[in-house]
Image (cartoon, rainbow, N blue to C red; front, side, top):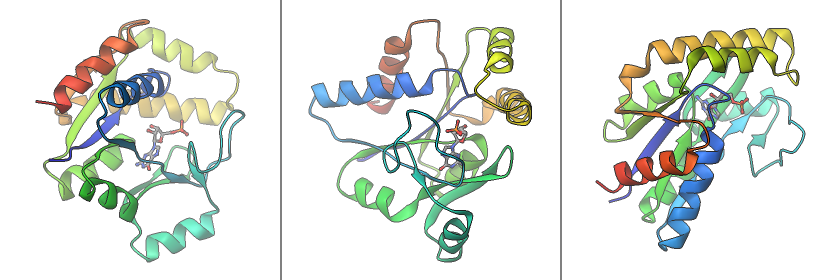
Length: 188
Ligand code: 5GP
């Protein structure tokens, strides 16, 4: 049976790298995996591609989708930007036999777990909390306000990590090992 998996963790913890290793593992084994692409109203960052990393849409379009019940879950994150998981795409992939990964925040996870109790929630922890906070503070690509909300969100998520089914510590430079752990959880 297809698995629906939610992966959360503070920004800067290395979720993206872990998930790309996981994708390679599925490819090597000829297994079907779909990484959900969320809609967001936040600005596109350098190096990001529309419809690959996110569907970058306006707030108006986002609100229209909320009205039409197009999201499996959605959240207004940090500085007021919206993020949401497109419902029909995820359902179609699950019905087609794909395992589906949602890389979303803790509020999104709570909504998904309520509606899909069989989903697997995985929280990725940094090996060293203090180090993570220091790194987040020093990221100079973000405004003060964004940094502040990211720090607060990271603290909140780490404090509430026990609501997840599994907690994985992503040790430095061991993202392949973390991906293997997740692969094994998904094949239990
Ligand atoms: P970023 O702006 O750094 O790409 O993402 C900020 C946060 O939003 C991350 O914690 C990310 O996991 C979360 N996020 C991304 N897409 C979604 C989504 O569709 N729904 C929810 N609830 N959170 C999301």
